[in-house]
Length: 64
Image (cartoon, rainbow, N blue to C red):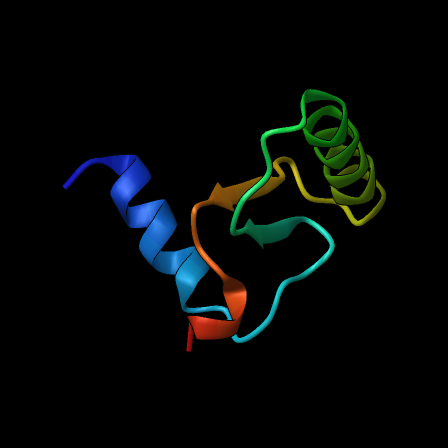
């Protein structure tokens, strides 16, 4: 199993989204994607996280 597989499995264990991580079910609008990434990176930095993560194609409501 690669590092990305491990990361995705660990992120899916979270019970809710946090300021440095979120699920996106669908989004193909380039401007919105750029804004989302920028916001995640900024909030991750403000909360002392080295990275921010988004998993596309997953609805966070179904992850438990």
